[in-house]
Length: 199
Image 1 (tube, rainbow, N blue to C red):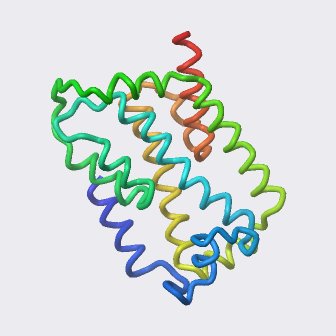
Image 2 (cartoon, rainbow, N blue to C red):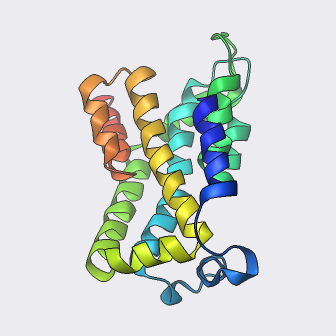
């Protein structure tokens, strides 16, 4: 995990193509909420990075039984994505049977099919929006011209892999965990199926 985190930082700092800061028009449009100025596929990926932290909150907080709490890393992921989550995995140590008040509430949230269903429907809508209205060619151009787009693309790939890692190794989902490689929608469908089983 540490090597992946270091590689992600190195990519963002030294290798990600495109303009940065005030010169990055796409970043300025996305952060200001002017989504109509960006390609829909870019907006879709940007939105996915806002949903992924909610998924990791549903995955990690109910199992937060280690000495190192997960919640600061989850909160940080809303701004920093995998840059915030990866350190949790290599800094945490052996499982400690620590009871936290948040854990039971988080379990209720995780097992609420309505919360998960809402996120899944939202994600499906974003997929349709990005695929129908967006352009792979324009996304590729944005990837080359905007450092934000290039970094958030790498972040999406890492978060997708990390969701697979958590569901396979901590939720013991076996082969079903490969659904996680459908970014965002895959882990939500697995969580939804799990919630339905517990009804």
